[in-house]
Image 1 (cartoon, rainbow, N blue to C red):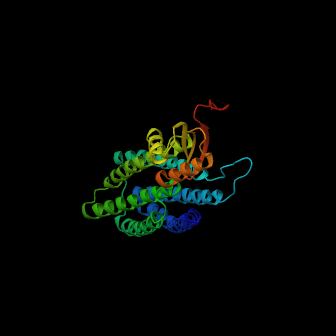
Image 2 (image 1 turned 120 degrees about the vertical axis):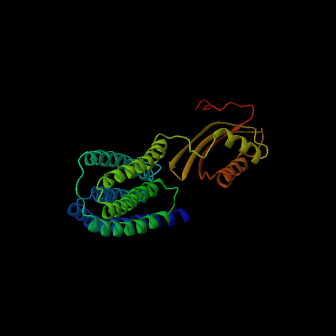
Image 3 (image 1 turned 60 degrees about the vertical axis):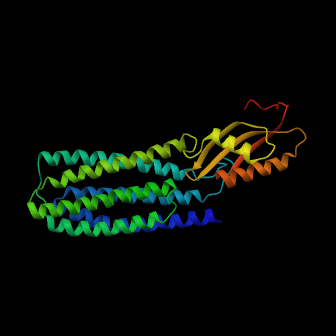
Length: 294
């Protein structure tokens, strides 16, 4: 199945990104300490949390492979969203810490060895670009992949900032450029982190998918399914960012073939609205079912 293939491919992409990131993280951390560059240390810090976040993302895909059971009838796929939420929070905290450290270095500049800093930053950028490309080739609607990719993007921006800072220091000797650019990168990371936290939090709170309007969906179904009288008690939420779930009551004419209407509604929901998992209660016009108040 396509979903299973995408899931397996996404899991492999995250694992490759984890291996690349972990391999270079140690070199960048050592280089940052030896050169005295906050930009490199900040980027190495990003990479450390990337290793944790990518490992968490990979573990989330592994957990999602588990089949539904009596305690978790939807299975474990929601764990991917939880991993994305945790990654967003960690990005937010890292950005705040880097900003705090940078402000201190602006007040008291630290001498930076621009040569080693430049070499390490360029190598780090190459690694980050490869990791980012691997993740971007996956399903971009998957919040777990997006959260991991944003961590790597933060590193990529950090490497660019370190390269610029190193060049400026080499040409002018102005060391404050290092923490100033670190703050700029942190602000960009904060914006990206807020987006991930907002979207994953919305899903965890069973919010209506952002691309779905329940009123519009009901109106469209009434047009798409001939003879359908009314739709009410519509509830839409998401299991993951790309898997909407729906429950609804559908009123059909007296004497109508309930199974036929049920099939037409399911087909319209899948083909026109991308809803593959729907629980639909069919009601006959003029009759009030015992559980209509649900």
